[in-house]
Length: 190
Image (cartoon, rainbow, N blue to C red):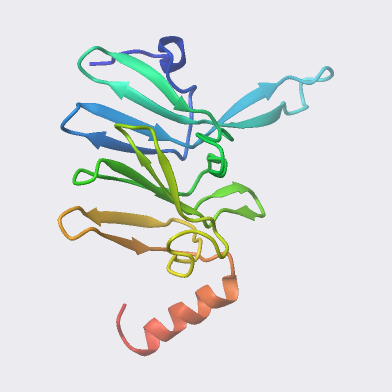
C-alpha cells in the first residue's frame, strides 16, 4: 500500500537519497536521518544546456506508523542545546537504533566531495538529548575509537552486548584501501 507519493506534504522529508532509516518497534516509529535532495534550476537558454542541481541536506525526522504522521526532530545544522556541537546531516553514514537504551547512534559520512565527517553521536529518542561520543577530533568520550570514514560503510548493532560492528569499503585514503585488499589476497582470506 502506498501511503503517500509526497512525504514532504505530510511534514516529512523531501524526496531524498543516501539517507538512513531505523525502526523503533516499541513505539512503532521510523527514524530517518540525512540524505540529500536535488533541486533542479533550469537555465535560461538553449535546450542543450543541462539544468544545475542545488543540493540540500535533510534533517532528522520521525514517522509515527499508528497515526500516519511525520515530525521534524532536528534540522541540518541545528544545535539541540548550548555547548553541544551542531548536528550536521550527511550521506554515506551509519545510523543504528539501540532498543536497550533507546538511542540512535550516528557516525561517519560525507558532506561534500572533499568534506568527510568522522564524528560519533547518540540521540535519545525519548528525551531528544544529544551526546557527542566523539567530535571527529580529540574531543568526546571515545576520541580514538572511531573507524576511518569509508565509502559503502555498513554497520550493525548487538543491543544485548552494547556493541557496534562496522565494515567499510573504499577509504578516503585510496592507497590504504588498495594495500588492504592486497594483504587480504596474499593471506587467501577473500
